[in-house]
Amino acid sequence: MNHDKIPVAERRYMNELHEEHQTWVKELEFYKEELEIFRNRLGEVSIKNNKPEERADVEHFQNQFLREIEVIDTLRHDINAHEKVLVEYAKDHPAAVEHTYFRDHTELTDRMQRFEELWKELKNDFNRFLSKWM
Image (cartoon, rainbow, N blue to C red; front, side):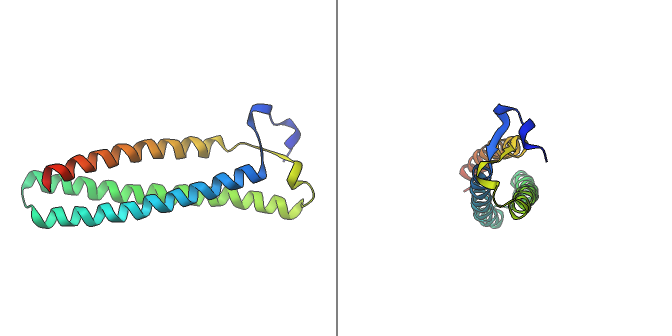
């Protein structure tokens, strides 16, 4: 890994990347907990309403929630994999960790931002659904 050739705009210190990883993992845990609340609410709606239109919406959100769990798990896995690379580097080069640049994890950043945008849309859609059927 040649750290000297990283363009200035893409340089980050290990501790910055590590802190961002920790923040993302905590956020993903929060989203997963919130998803469990959504699933419970969906169950309540499903019990109270038995109309075909409502059942189709329930199915839609059930599928969407399952997909979100997959996305969260994949993101968490990829964050942990990147963290592992940093840990291995730190073990192999303990004296260099404090002053070595690493390439920014822009791909992970982009994926987290996109996930958060889609999460907000899903949450808004689900809240509209709840207000319609509760």
